[in-house]
Amino acid sequence: MDNKNEKMAVLPVKKLMLSMGVPMIVSMVLQAVYNIVDSAFVSNMAHGGEDALNALTLAFPMQILMVAFGIGTGVGANVLIAKSLGQKDSKTANKTSGNAVFLGIAIYIIFLMFGIFGAKIYIDSQTDNAVISQLGTEYLKICCVLSFGMSMFAIFEKMLQAAGHSLCSTAAQILGAVTNIILDPIFIYGLLGFPQMGVKGAAYATVIGQIVSFAAALIFHIKFNRSIRMKLSDLKPSLKIIGTIYSVGFPAIISQALISVMTYGMNLILKDVSESMVTAYGLYYKIQQFLLFAAFGMRDAITPITAYSCGMGDQKRIKDCVKFGHLYTAAIMLTGCAVLEIFAVPFSEIFGLSGETQSLCISAIRIISAGLIFAGINIAFQGIFQALGSGVGSLAISVCRQILFVFPTAIIFAHFAKLNYELNRLLWTVFPIAEILTVIVAVPFFIRISSKEKIKCH
Image (cartoon, rainbow, N blue to C red; front, side, top):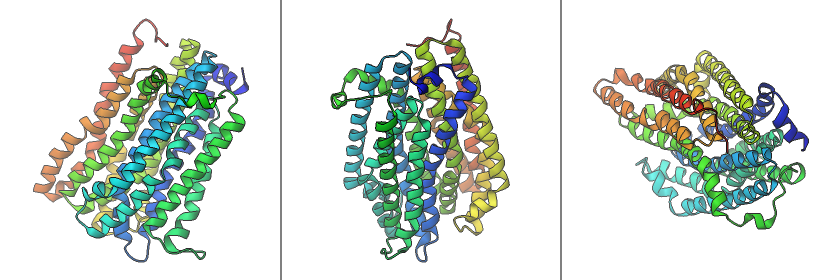
């Protein structure tokens, strides 16, 4: 047993979850950096900053969808690899890793085709403004056509995390994020002799950062991930292994993809009330991403630790995973909620907002943030259900908190806001309401699973 696997087996869960969770949180938060940094720089362009910002906002749901497929596939592989390592089944761990790489390549090809043939159609479905359409299409096409760095990093990141090498995955993420931050002003504004590329520059900075992260993760995997030694033959697709990956990973894909569906759908609903609400919501969501992605990072620590404990058949460690997973996620969300409430005005000023749009963004920050503690509970349950192989539970939480309890309420509140614009802030209450209702669904679902004699792990 190597040192990393020994830690996964014997280190107390509360310490193990912190040692793995903190790097994963940093890694996930840095993923949020890509979008918000691009938006901050393009919004401060000398000319056309507002149009460019709107263009990036319209492209955002599709970028989330790309991340969803990469991370979801990685999560499925992560659980199977971690469980196999816990069972000392290196053959399955290696074969799973190879199949995950195969799936990462397939995901890239799908979004390559979308970038070439579908980017303009997608952007045009959200706007009638020719300038915004052109800028959004240029940005999204580059992000899709050169998305191999994103899709492959998602796979190797989860492979490193499955074997306990979360520091390596975080280091790779940091390298990519720093690359993006450095290149953004250079490419967007045309510094250091480079041509001024505007939104195209933002897109190129993003994909180059993703490629740097992938390259670093691949190097770390080869050098340090001794628990996994896949061969070229392991890339041969196995329907059984792919099916197992997606039995856990598909709910994770849906969970992330529903963020895309929710933001796209809310853009359409809010557009009927006012364009200022669309802008305010889009910017709030990018600010909120830091907290949501921090919770996702803790969830991604909960998942492999719980899965490894399942492989060991250790019921006490599984219970500790449930307890400390919720405690740590709640702490993240409570801290984040306090920060957002206190610094709502400065956050709204990052993008140069003023007047009605700034007022709407501030109210969104203060109202929606009130539901973050409940969002944390739901996200922790997702990680637990994924690790225990309860894809239905994870999927149910995603559908409830992002679709089922959001759209009907939003449509009703939007109707009142159109009748009386003074009621527009009612729309921000949709999100806390959805999170609270989802907790009410999640808790009895978990009780039902845990009440079956003992939690069964296979």
